[in-house]
Each structure stands twice: as C-alpha cells, then as structure tokens.
Image (cartoon, rainbow, N blue to C red):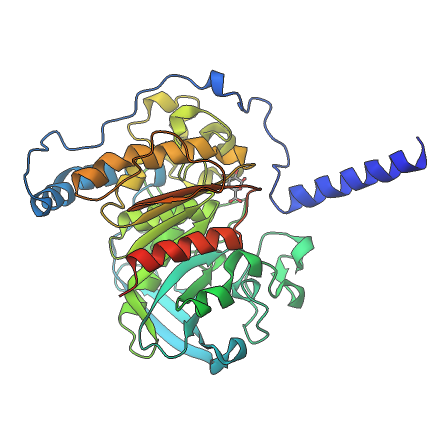
Length: 442
Ligand code: GCU
C-alpha cells in the first residue's frame, strides 16, 4: 500500500471509531436492518379517536378525550410498551448546594440542588438523590424553561466551571473523559453544543437539567437493583413485574418528580407551568413518555428519538424492537419484548404516544442521516397524531408530504428534518425556541 493510501485508511478507521464512540454510527448495525422504502410493509395503524366523536364544542371534546380514549391509550402504552409507573407518593427534600447571581457572564442565575426522594409509605427504606442544575435568565421573575435529562452529568451541558461534577456511575466514554465509569474534569462542557445554554438565556428561557443515571443508571448489564425501581418494590420483589416500568418509565417519573418539586418552590425564577420537556435519542423517547403521562408539561419536544420514541414501529425501517432487546430491552417493560418481529400485532403505535400530548404543543425533530431512527417514520407518527389535535380544535400537521430538509413546519405540532447526523444542534434549538416563543411566551 502506498503512503497516501495508508494515510487514507488510517483516517477512515479513526473517523469510524470516532463515529461509533460518539453514537453517531451503530457499533454493529444489525444485518437485517431495512433501509429500503420499497420493503416497508403495508400496515394499518390502531385507531386513535374515540368511537363517539360527535361532541360539539372543543371543551366537550377535551373532556371526552381526557376521560375516555386518552386514558385508554395511556393504559395500552403502559401495558404493551413502557410499563406501569408506580402511583405511590414520594417525599422530596431539597438542599441548595451552590448558587450564583452572576452566572454565564452575569446574564443568568445558577442554582444547584440535591433532591432526596423517598417513598412516603411502603416497605423500602431507600431514597434516591438527584442533582438538579437550574439556570434562569436575569431580570425575569418567572421565566419559561426547558427541562431535560442529560447523558453524563450536569457538568457536560456547559463549560461553566462552577457546575458540580457528578460523582455517580456513568457508562464508559473515554472520548469525553469518563474514566473507570466516573466523570472527570475533562467532561466539562462535553455536550455544550447539544444544550446551547447561552442561547436559551439570551432568548429569555431557563434550563432545568439532571443526569439520567441519578434516576436509573443506564447500565447495559441492567439488574434493577439500583436507581428508582427498588424504592417501590413490594416485600420480596427484586425486579419489576412484566407489566411494570422499565428504565424509560423511571426516567419519565424522575422528570415529573422534579417538575412537581419545582412547582412548589418560590426561590427559583422559573415558571413551572411553562416548561417544555426535551430529550435527545433515548432521552427523547423519555421526553415523549413523560410528556404523554404528565399533562403538566406545557410543551413536549422529541429530538431524534427513533424506535420506541417518535417513529412508527409498523414501518420496520431502521432500528426495530428486536434490535433493542439484547442491549437495552430494560428501557421498556418486559412484556414489550413479546412484540419482537410482530410489530403489526402491537395494540398501539407511536402516533398514539404523541396524541397523548394533545392539545399541548408538540415538536418532533429528525436528522437526515439518522436513518437508524427512521426520520420518515417520525414524521408519519406526528402526522397520524394530528387527527386528535384537529378534533380538539388545534392544528396538527396538515402537510401531506414530508417537509424538505431544513424546511421546518410549525403549527400546534411542529416538525423538521435537519441536514446532518444524530445530534442536537443550534439549528434544532433555534426551531424549539421559535416554537416556544409562539406557545409559551406570555
Ligand atoms: C442507540 C439505540 C437507540 C437510541 C440511541 C441513543 O442507537 O439503538 O434506540 O435512541 O442509542 O439513545 O443514543
């Protein structure tokens, strides 16, 4: 091999390793992954609207939706996909660990809390600690805000040197500075481009974030002995039952718990009634499930959430249920696995998940090169959720065709497919902020 060829091959290998380690490429894309649109099976989606749709006013319809079909769909998604979330009440004790009125060059306030969450009743003596980072723009008594979980600790969302570094267990990721499953100084700001904190503040929004592993560690050797699950085990229980929550359910519960707590706080300049819940990838699946169950999130944003998130299972395009089972089946309830390679038999599909967000504003974003997440399936699920929005007097996705690359559409459902790979970028954030300006600004 001549030198220039060797250099090329080395470069190719290095970029492949970088792409795999950043999660942009799947380490081993399964051989049966379908990327051929002509091989997408014909499918019929499960019905969405109530049988009785004759109610004449929007208010009557909203009542009918909430009291009947919405609740039915939520039960179906619990039973067949994410598992049931325990309804047990919890006590939340919070401690302000650090704060500043001069954060981010004086434009924001920063508060860091540790929340200790314990079941109010039951047999468990365990508690869970969640570190919550809050930024709020200065000069506003109650700012609307984005709330979302991060993958590797709060210190990754900004290079602000005062963010406390998470001491919790993390999945390995040498590239960003995770050493022996712990975050190091190097991880500071590792994902700042995915959060764009300065831009949010400049536009008058706050940010509330916590590390997903504080709620349930995303350990691929998952055994449900740590995280939120054991808090609610019945006497002698060591695993969630087949119909009980997996990790996505726990993450979603954690977000609602933080939201609830925020709503009781007077010393935080964030309006808990104007929170947009956001998540990327597995945490986008989580944002959808949290926003679907908890109607107190005012807006819901799914960024590249793909299979088990925004995309339709029945298209069998890109990642499929059976691809998730071995590595990350614990994200879902155990019963979900019975639909592996039997997607057509699922009593639900993901348009129903999105419909649970109605009539609240919903934004779904895809990336052109993120074929594994099936951009078209993400658009179609949002499109097929639209009849509920329309029925409730809102505007869903009226577009008959998938919007072109970088041509966002924004009604009460917003959608865009951005050029580029699986990621959250400034382009995505600018769309979310415009959408929030339309729906959350007073
Ligand atoms: C894997 C997984 C996806 C998930 C993604 C992520 O690619 O297969 O379902 O969305 O990880 O969370 O980064």
